[in-house]
Image (cartoon, rainbow, N blue to C red; front, side, top):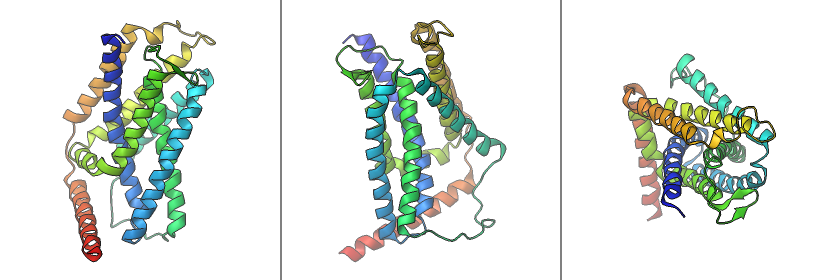
Length: 275
């Protein structure tokens, strides 16, 4: 395999790791809120079942997508979906300003254990779709390695998508707290991450429009060096903007730190009881 090819694959993998980390942290926060009302042992079980479901779904959907990835209708739906979730999230965060406000929240009837597990599974599936579509959009524009073919996809591209999916699950399980701290130190990164998701959606739409069955734009454009340089330059600028233009929200940070401290104390109590 040529060095330039390895470099391009390595770059896409690094982008995926960072994007998966930020999205997984945001998803982990949502799941933590969903299971918060359960007792400690049931909370861990619910998250474990949800994680197992996400793992199975990611693998199943990955193999399905490998056979459908060259269908322009699938590419179009994926691109539109990524643009939708990006715009929806940014509008809610920036324009409608959905903030944590414990005092104004009315108490809701809490779900039982299995209903909570079902909700976690559904949320995990939604998160998995976002993650896999973003990985697919980045991977299918990579030049084929020629090593082998899995479904209708080059083995190198398949490996990148598979690795991205695994990284998302691993981060949600083991490194979410660390990414959550980064998000609250640099809250602009969350907006930047969803802007990147939207930008990846644009990339998928470019692939759709350059598909041989449509050819709205030249077929070779989506794989051209100029487009790739422009795409990744904008992606890096979005990420840098999210990092350097962020202002820490002290109220949110203090609230999150309090929640994390409570969770650590509860875990310590469980460990003490075990011994």
